[in-house]
Length: 171
Image 1 (cartoon, rainbow, N blue to C red):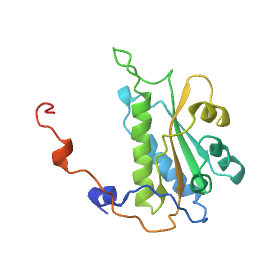
Image 2 (tube, rainbow, N blue to C red):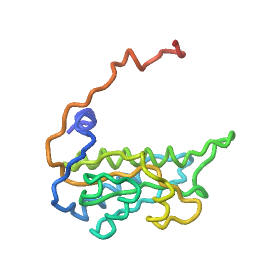
Image 3 (spheres, helix red, strand yellow):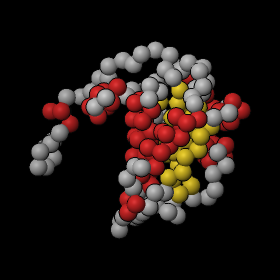
Image 4 (tube, rainbow, N blue to C red):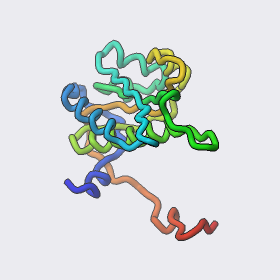
């Protein structure tokens, strides 16, 4: 499959079969995530995989949707503020690095026939508690991970003419 085909294949999945995800596949996905670029190669990410039935219920406290907590696995992508690079004006790049790693997760999963769904609308304080994150470690996105129940649909996307500006922004 070409990269263009992979990008077209990847979509947000909100229904999963109960077939478990093989541990070696999860490790392959995490390997892809750790190969993501990061600012100054600081690699501030931390991945928490909720794989066992009892720990998959923990993320229910942060994002209470049945399709999410019933997925065979849930991955939280976090970053360590003490490791992440900060730009001269104080801009924190750990979130950016975590987002890039999450993109690698979603693409690797799609290539393997697995579904994901980027979850950013969660309760961060609860996430820190249920994941037992130490001070300075921040959760960025979560994703359920599993075999999709239904085939993916074509994604609607804005035309390039609406989102691309050449040389400078023209409003």
